[in-house]
Length: 344
Image (cartoon, rainbow, N blue to C red; front, side):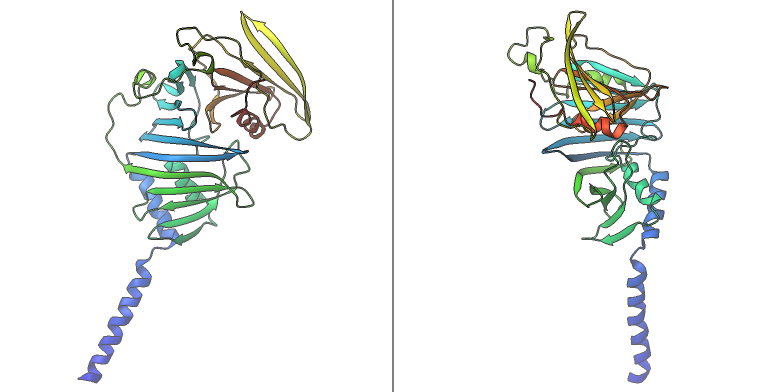
């Protein structure tokens, strides 16, 4: 009896070991599940904290994403340092960048986010896993940890990324690194829900411009007396970043329509101008261009047929326009280096 039972015991142990081996999913299994999840999901809501290391100042954002299949998006970016919220909105009318506290809106006709998917979108992270055939996967505390290539327009210094997913394929963390494996961007997801219900007007432009949940923050010229109209006076902000082979030239103050405008010229390997103004007009619209995530704000990028690029953004009530033959990545670096700089 004992001898007859031994083969059964060995068979049972072998079956358990075999089941344990096959119970753990391979990277290809997880990738197949991710592809199926993208196809089947009706949408999602996510909450995350985005931290960007740019220069000596780290920028932190609360990021709330709503996605309703196939093309409705609402991305609310709230700066922890500035307390200001901007919204990237996509609906059947187009793509908008909304700045509610300034009553500003830009309208685009573009393929965002397909052509320029930001790294805090679930589908951007998942597709980077699916597309990288040299992906690596490990398990960490019952989570899948993928290491894959990073390819983000406007920031070629981001070359690698690690992405943490639960067994239900919900994101919990992402780290985006440079070629030296220094972490430049961190995303910590605090909440993620598949297939939520949305209000009928959740992606309506007017609702999002007028929502009472957004903070109304006075610009620097209004902090002491909110009864006064915005002033056109401000200190000149000189970017701390200049591309190699470029030198700063003249700083020219100009008055246009009663408003003070400052033009900073740069010449050398690239030739460009930085225009700074504090306009009193509040509502702006554009029918072309592409939203660009600068970290502290969302910019508007336009490129014409002569390869001249225009990047516009707002910071503490000052409107910046960078124009010239700079590559997009260099424009983003110049723009980011205006953050945290005091006017002179």
